[in-house]
Image 1: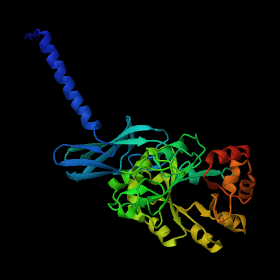
Image 2: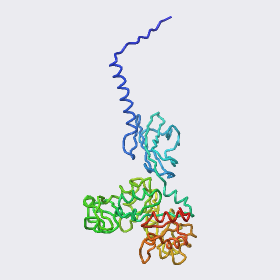
Image 3: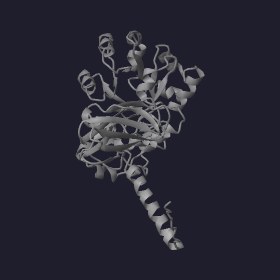
Image 4: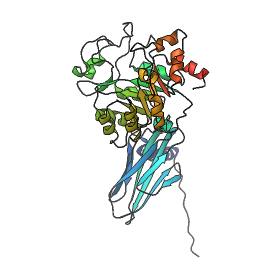
Length: 399
């Protein structure tokens, strides 16, 4: 019998530490390969002539949002298998994966592709899931409840300027009193969409001039003012920054018509993962409504309804669930009932205008106007005083 002897050498402590350090460095390098980059980045890896890359419909999806993940494969021979996994669980075996997240969190979805020659490619996509989906909430809307829309943020707070990130954060801090915050996107000279209701910055900032004639940098050099003219430390936010500030915490209504082109607005909203959490207010413009519905994926439309014929038209447009009508048409005539009969929900604007002062009356303890609106079957109300309205609607069992 042949004897085989195994010799075990004794290494110094320094040598052992060097080897351990090398192993750790190799491990960390592998971890970095699959974890670095921003939230929109996916990492790819391949062997031989094959490579794979994941394209996500949204890297920041909401709960119940339909997320589509596609794998782009380059090189290789005929593909033998595609396997999607997440946290050790196989999700699918097709080149396209559709998935709906039920829990918030950060998820790493990976795909492994093998061709007939045995070449393997892998890719990883990080997804940050946070907050609710407006689309899902609308599809499951409780007709016994009434939503509240905060006008230009939380306008009831005299210490916060309109159309500001502070206003958005204030709405969020009201712990559910505001379902949707209404803001006004407008385009600067150099193509940045900012929040500004007026055509000029004169009323709300320390500067002067039309938004379209000023660069974003110029507008940022001024300070926002309060309703009484007091200068604040707040600056005019970009739409992107405003949406990111509210992402996963509150829904938005974008009053953009005649201020920003629909496609430019769409691109910004999509870039920050907010298509499933934002209303595109199209007013009564049918062409703009049908135009945005052709985008893929389509945004959530929020049109204004003028009459019963218009209600019939809107009921035939895919994705239309809510429509706004004026306070005058809410209180006079049968338009709310006609819209409801088409399967749509109705909202109205309770702001002080056109002789109506129901919004201010709430601050005096008078809710007669609110009761009149509720008697018409309205499902969402825009107001400058969301806290007061929320408290009253809770008393009525509407929240």
